[in-house]
Length: 364
Ligand code: SAH
Image 1 (cartoon, protein in one colour):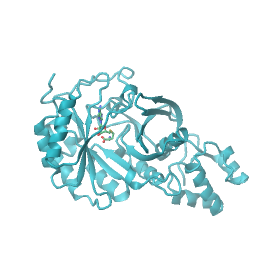
Image 2: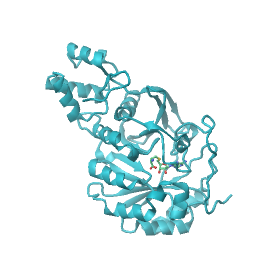
Image 3: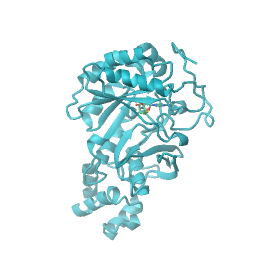
Image 4: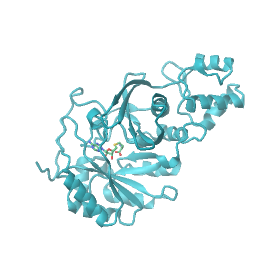
């Protein structure tokens, strides 16, 4: 059984190949026609049943009458001065879903969303101010990649990171099949080493992700004491640092080798050299790489980005402790496409003010 949209049309996208081929066989498609359908969706990136020369006329007409192709509609593309593009998609129910295409020297990364809004309420993130509207379906997740490839035929999008809007591990039932489609060799063909799922630290779901998917894992750490992490990431009250790191140490990571640990740097909150020391203690013996993200501002927030010298000193300190540490270049911030800048700006959606509530230290 395939999922259906609100008008009862079958959603072909986001269904892993074995299931789609089984469904096609039930519908009476010959195996060659079922393979051709898969190729039409994910290799040819077709947007219209009428233009599928690889399918027999009868099959095409049958699909056109009962199924739909794209689950999302590309509404706008905003290119930032640095070449990053923010893609805004519209869902059937009028929500906006954002992806960010980040070109590199040879290949590009697409940062995809897994939810409309987010329920995690991280205090430094713009998406959090929206609250959670709903989960995206697997079709809507996969379509971000399909439509980006269609729109940018000359860009080789080889990497996908689940670092857009939402907490992907709150939506694993849709994220797992979407990943299966993305890494399928006969279709979108991403290497499983080039699909990364980032989480704020939902411990049971981390275990499920690792058990059920080939994707790489990234975890947003963002603080080195429970006091600070409780204040900026409410998830920490449920899964505190010791619980999170104990779980990470026990993961069967053979194929994935190393976990990426993200660390958003907030001036005066978590960017001291004492934090660097504590971070090194937490990760001791854990195969990981650290990715520092200088905080990206958004209207209404009172956090600050550390000065470049502080970022460099933090990184150098960790490297001195022999930790593999990189700084994530800020990309796309003039179009609000950088990390933590996706979603409606608070001006359009008045909610509580974003103040770093109850934090121990806020330098001004
Ligand atoms: N929910 C997932 C993925 C989405 S956010 C997660 O929490 O990991 C992707 C990364 O951006 C996370 O590491 C998050 O901590 C970081 N982030 C959020 N807001 C940010 C901001 N304003 N500036 C820089 N990084 C931010």
